[in-house]
Image (cartoon, rainbow, N blue to C red; front, side, top):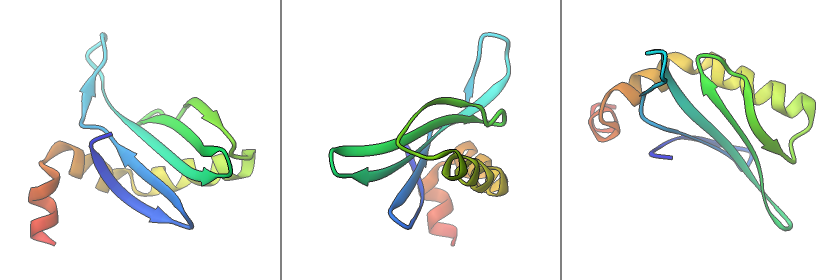
Length: 92
């Protein structure tokens, strides 16, 4: 993933640039990960749909909380993905 967004309680959120699917709809891949004893727990989804594409190691409640976090921060994620992340970081 290209953009780092946050790390809270050792859960990291990264996401892609804006992409376009074959139907012309824009989306952003989002990826949460958390270290565990054997590697990482992960959750992959997309904005704006917020459907789980793949996941391992997160409980249903944790998955719901992570998707809610992505939903709450969707505006900022779209803004960063639509611009060069360095440009946004420099303006903060």
